[in-house]
Image (cartoon, rainbow, N blue to C red; front, side, top):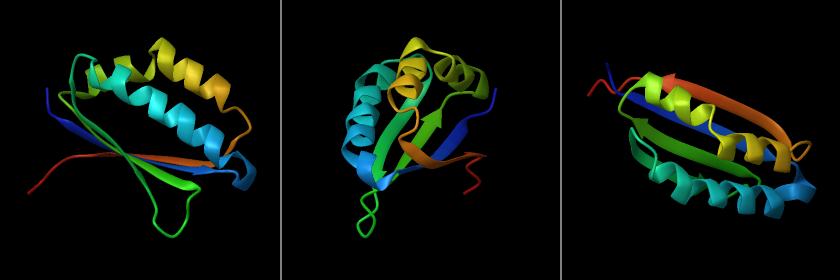
Length: 96
């Protein structure tokens, strides 16, 4: 199994920034305690408060997939339904 890096960009609707931020912050302690989570760090763009980025490292893609199917991710999706304007996710491999 090879390690996996995830870069997830979340753009909240302008009128939903606070809601999205609160819901993203809820994910951190739960996810950091999950099997396979090496790092799970949330960032916000200094010039655009609606743009959040998770930088994640996982021991394997399989363990990340388990995370993506976890109840707290489903709860996040439900709580932020209609509040997110754009979401992009990149699966990456560390090369240097």
